[in-house]
Length: 323
Image (cartoon, rainbow, N blue to C red; front, side, top):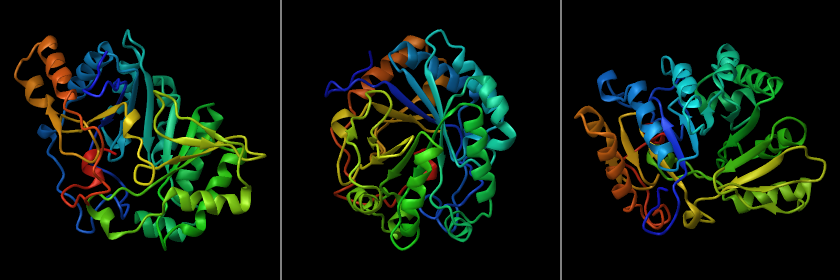
């Protein structure tokens, strides 16, 4: 079992397959863009598979593929198939902007993907284009329906932004009434270009929803493996509404995740530069046991708590970390 110095069991691995994205969301990609890593600088799919295999042997039970946009990565489907075929059979999930899903959904399902999160901050075409720089809202909405038709678990991820999508929050929550498994509101994290915007506290979001949907039938505590969201079920809702509140309600005491960046660094906390250089180990001929030892020792240095409330991170951008 992979455990840090504070006895938190690390069971959730998020993997950034690429730092490339087809959208330019304002709080993720800076106005002047980002310098993309070269092909040689990012892990090969074989190297990623090796890391996943080793870490599932060490107790990781859930693997989520992210980006950038993960479906931009060539042969991402093959990697998903290979991870699904591991003897440990980890739970597999993906976070995507949904634009490419219509052309990949059948293959993703066949590869073993059943759990998908789709980032969507508005249901208005003009606001969507303002946030993302794209007019692909129709594709995203179609992809949601296609995933549901496949019987997949679909969650919508929403970042509430003051003065931008405040008027959309109630309508987005409404998607959990009859369509998706959950709509989750995620507080804006002060990383890089996101510092140019102001997010809404989830306490404010809850008050907005309460005015329309009532108090709700109670809060569902987050699962140990499933993630940090706290969920509320409103009367008449088929799905749940979730709140991920790293700033207003820290959940560091139950953090069970680490992140593998596309350039091979095992990042211990989203708010910290702490990382383990796995790429160098992988490419230097290190044995499986040597890599496992490096991960075990490195994870012991995971911070007790993030420092978002004490400083703004202007050095990084979310697209380069993997979310």
